[in-house]
Image 1 (cartoon, rainbow, N blue to C red):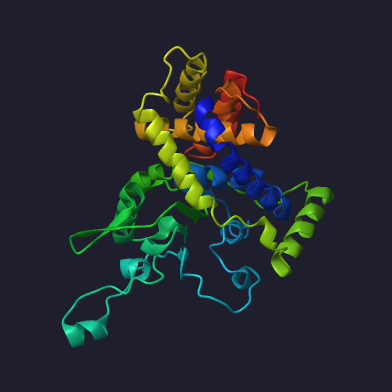
Image 2 (cartoon, one colour):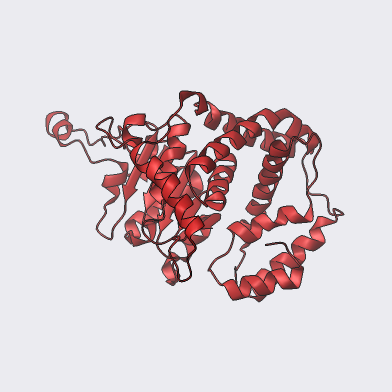
Length: 343
């Protein structure tokens, strides 16, 4: 693990800087920002859950701008390049959305002139590095089936042909988590879940309201976009990180130690999450979350300037924070009390 960290420390320091820039611009959004960073590092999908107006769309657009994928003009609300062109794709899904709206319509002119049935794929979802799908669970079964393949295999099937995609990060948003059984498979594929709430609530204090207004006013009307803060090569270097994880695992240099003391804590955590009905914790989710724990530990070490690392019990809090199936403050409080976990 230390060998991996030493090789990738500079990359994680850059990830931390992107997070710092976002923290300065968005009030009280540390958890979703950290979740987005972990999703970018691991390549796993993340679901942002929260009511309308909590800044979900604005946050992902600002991240993509810092990664050099979204033009400054669009972030400022000025006329500019189409949001769906190039490296970033964004779409609001409804029950009437058709797959062609995401993957491209067929070129009717080419069909009539050359008798060739071909999609217009420029600027569509399969060509983007970052994809943001808003209200994902409103989509039809046809869209959801295509999305499962898109998420699992990083490809989509077009008339029997498997087309590779350029996807590096998939972000979706929803106002509420799904309870319908037919949505369970798609929901489980969103390894990371982060919840956002409005500041307004009974008993609201002036201080958090003021901080929100200060940050949101500037971000809405005059976002501070600095070229020096952007890192246009970061996504590519995160691909190299994931490749390094695979190569070290294949070489036997990055393995699960069955005698590691943190495994007893992990066992208790997973069992309690199921006990309090906070997460079903599928085998797939459990295995993939260990990759997130590893990435989070490296990110924490990079921020703290550490030179050697090991997984500690507190690193398992990431599972509690980003792998809850449904929000249940009472159940979460019982879980923390049982395991004596820090909030």
